[in-house]
Amino acid sequence: MKQNDMSVVDHIAELRKRIIITVFFLFLAVIAGFLLAKPIIIYLQHTTEAENLTLNSFRMTDPIMVYMQFTFIIAFILTSPVILYQLWAFVSPGLYEKERRVTLSYIPISIGLFLAGLSFSYFLLFPFVVDFMERLSNDLDINQVIGINEYFQFLIQLTIPFGLLFQLPVVIMFLTRLGIVTPMFLSKVRKYAYFVLLVIAALITPPEIVSHLMVSVPLFILYEVSIFVSRFAYRKAQKTQFEEENKEG
Image (cartoon, rainbow, N blue to C red; front, side, top):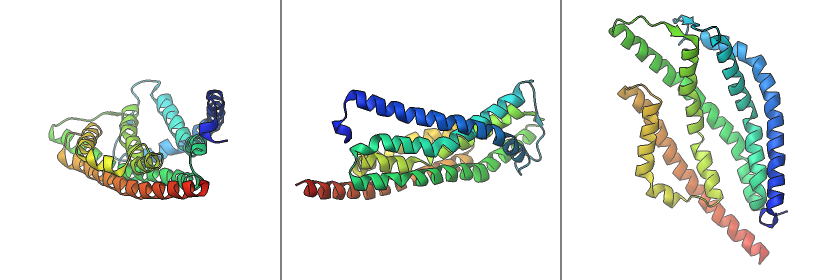
């Protein structure tokens, strides 16, 4: 059934079905996250960035808070392919056949970009920020007493946003295929987009120019890559629409 032939009730029933499937897999992923959280937390405490730090628990609930945070983060990452597929399955009836195949390929690309964003922020940005904070504390003659909850909160706030920001090319490509944005529009609002990305970079980095540039420059590159893939997706969408209209004609 074509999406534009579906009634409002059909749309609601389809959305309900997709949500139920997602919730079911999320429940299974939470169980898996509960089992995986402990080894991952222990591993992160013995990496180069944390091995010289003494992590403390200031409240009795800090360990369980960290444990549950990682449980749900792991569950979300494990469920993300299912979420993306269900989203694709919900909107795909409104796409041409060739567009369905192309947009389905976005799912592994999206997951790869998310992992690339996590890796960039954890292995490159996070060590630099930790080193900067340590040097600043030493310069100010401050003895750092680091809480385990605060440490992992800082780690999560620095890495997860990068995983999401690295989705920009895929999101732009998908929106272009749906006809919501065009490469011309993205080029037109480039300076405003750069300003927004600068603000985002300032929010997730310490007040230091080098770390700010380490975040801003990759974000600018991602935006330019997004414009490039948008042009590619726009041409493909125009071509597909032309071919489908000729078939129908």
